[in-house]
View 1 (cartoon, helix red, strand yellow):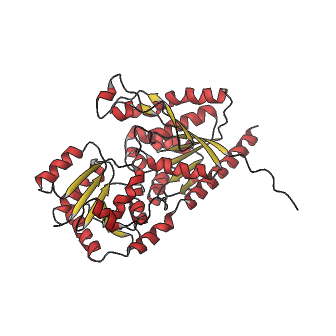
View 2 (view 1 turned 135 degrees about the vertical axis):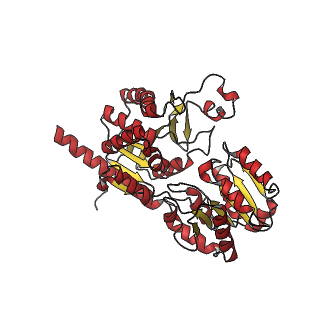
View 3 (view 1 turned 90 degrees about the vertical axis):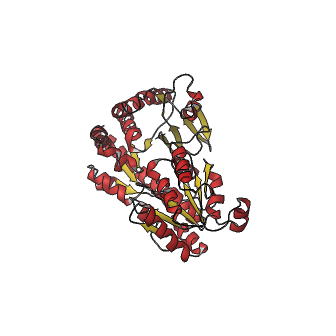
Length: 408
């Protein structure tokens, strides 16, 4: 009998992303952490995360807007993964063109020190192309390391429209050995920006089918004192998420209740909008909800509503579906790739309150069986994405090794 050799040594990756949670901001960038956790759990990769944050002036924790940033620790271990939070100087608005360079200057000493101390880094894995990915490309150039960039949405479909960031982004794309888009729409933008199509892979986000699963809706609704049709929206309270349009749509839906899970700069304006429309009794602002508690809300709702003006791949859609709850969403960017069957829900071509209200009425008049919606979501587990990442990393590293041999 032949004996198998020792298992291959895990790849050591440096993950660069300012979109990463901490104990001070547990839901911020959780989609990046979720993907990384699945990859680390495979045993093929040991990641180290550098999550750069803007420097906060003394006393910043006294201001609500700055408090989470100011209270973020220098480092912590999350789900077994080491995460460092280096600070860089950022001037709001004025600092955007030089932000990649500022981040690079903050990260380079950390990486240099780790390498001097004997750490091994096989590959840089950067999430969000601008500014994080550009800073990672600068690191890759300085330390002669291969680079994989992941685009997630507004980094390509919004920021890349600005002249200076666009030049930075095109340079980073040309420097990367691997490019990941979370939906086909973003993959096309990569190519429009000059990427070699052979380097672009679509690896969509997955959903945790154990955490997000059908629960007893009757019990949950009783605990939340809900009656009648229940709508839910989940996300940051910023204009592009369209919560104001969902509130306006609610005014056209008598007897419906709207749960709003999330926080952000628009909260006061949204509460005032609900008051002005005399909807205070039917709109509940729940604040920021821990990720692991969202399943209760998805299960309590009859429909998740997402009225965004742009999305790469909205995780909340799959999370709701995995709980058996169908969705109504605006047909922007990657969303049609997520909501691609009647049992998933309805897409809205026009981003307006009347169109949203009409789609909600249509869906709730003949909702799909919750088991059918759950079965649809089960097609989007994490396993294919994790396997795709591993295959991409191995291909990049093989190409990199061949190039180094050719240079020797």
